[in-house]
Length: 546
Image (cartoon, rainbow, N blue to C red; front, side):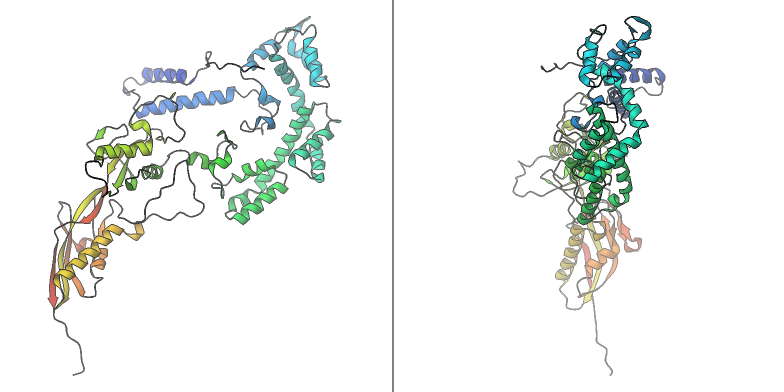
């Protein structure tokens, strides 16, 4: 047997591949919206959505056009070929040619088609070899090609198999029940049931196996639904083991148990590769959300997590809007715009004292490197065509997401006010200690704003997990006067704080009565070199009975 050479697919009208659908769709849009939508460049989000719709149509057509048979409905295309029925082996593209031959007039029977004459003859054949011999004899010799012959036999037997499977369901169910009582593996039980049915059903061995498998899988689906609440509630290893044992006792094979346990939103101790074959094909269809959500960035959290993989990124956030920095295509962005569908990665660059200033990359180069880490090579080569082969680990943007990057800004903060202390206290030590505690508060950040620790199993994608550090001020979070006063008053020598005011950047001083001082959305506070804190000494005395 020689391998069939690879050839490109040439669609025949009205069929079309992705490019054909896209061309038709864009032509229709140009004709119907010429005055309201005239920007049809590749970068335009509307064009991206139209191309995504075209791909969906072409993919849907491909998936439906290559399904030669609709029965049995419970057989999924993702299963190994050895577990499928004969219908899955029909060569795509041969069905139409075979149908044309079956519709022709039969030799010597002008009023009847080939299918009408051959169907009862093929149904009466006791074995596949007898059917093939029948089609090789006169007057059928040459009616079908060598490749079409087994396809024609399959189609001519399909009505018989479907009819018996539906009409004699009780008989098939009894055989499956009897095979279960003996025990053994699921495959052994199926084989015994098919052997028992051989004397009752006029079907060939592979057809008997398919009918038995259909009944057993119907029961497996029912058993899975009966155990669905237990599957969803299994959040401990002990509970998962118990549910797996119950499913196995209900007749599910080991593969079916894996599929059933995937009904949980986050199956315990289940990674995406557990639901896939070694070649990447999904064992569950449609793919489990666990597979989709860990394959590539799909949320702002994923974009920020990707950015933190860069060795010089200490922290990273994804904020809405287009901020000044570097755009998704590598070009500089000079003006901030609150555009929909735009995301900017705000990154805090880690200090690297061992790297000299001449070697340390400039801010634009550094931000480009961060984007390359977060969204892939598109920052270097924007507008890739759909035919490009992408590395499976190369992250990609969601449709219409525009992801840029900017550096975390630092806003200088000036404190103004009077520290009340006792006579004899060291003025410089009192002020220096208060400023050090406020600086530590700014560096540590507010505990209420720190990332929530993950609970349950850690779900990883195809990249190293780099979580956000807990310490540090969250960009844009306001400075609260009460917390600043608490940090200042931590020294027992400080009796109180009078007329405290805070100034951020070049803005005005804000009095403590206002409650808090806002910060720009990409800014964290840092004490300025110049401070305006003064010390007021007060006399204190002790009470006595005299």
